[in-house]
Image 1 (cartoon, rainbow, N blue to C red):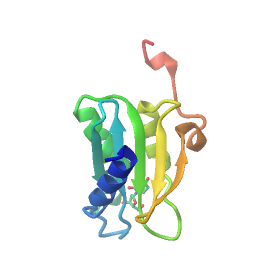
Image 2: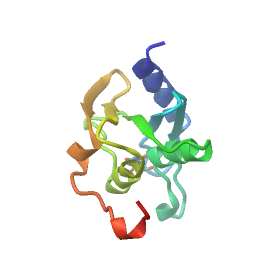
Image 3: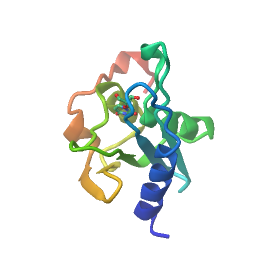
Image 4: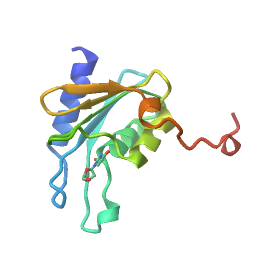
Length: 134
Ligand code: THU
């Protein structure tokens, strides 16, 4: 299966499990890690609204929990008149594990509508070299 198709199908499937009783806005996200494995998640809202978690956050956490550290691609899918762009916090989460080659696909449930890079969406991410050894 072509990997982009797999990312799309996996994110759409996760989206159908979104827990979004408050916004009613279902989001699915999938990530392709360096090993070739795909991890996916959906948004999970909470009655205490700030506790809600974005789809991208869950997918990235699943990748990290599996021991992987590099995003080769990210796909986000939602439905509505506007294409969903990852929120600011999720752009920072993506930036943590992305590089210049990481493909970011934005999709509705019918098709992938945009392909971009993290620097297109977040040109100046928070990157404090003093906080790391490298
Ligand atoms: N949401 C995501 O899952 N990812 C984003 O990048 C933007 C927003 C979710 C959060 C909330 O459950 C719903 O979409 C409406 O904001």
